[in-house]
Length: 68
Image 1 (spheres, one colour):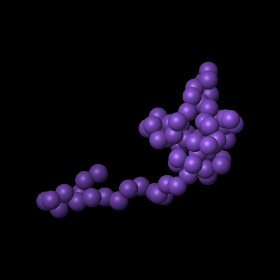
Image 2: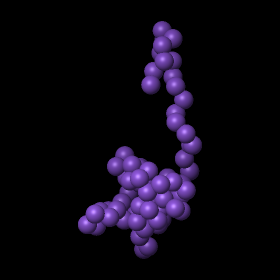
Image 3: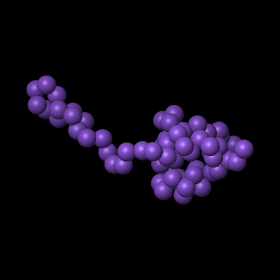
């Protein structure tokens, strides 16, 4: 099994290493920590490869005020 650092995974996914670490923290990307480096199994990149770009759209409450 091949493991990648967060920076290497970010290069493959087209995002920053910091965003990869945020995905790990959110529980969306499985990883193990070895010392101070996060290691991600190459096969696990498929779990986050398809993402919606940008921020989620704002929702309006029942009274017309925006949420978010």
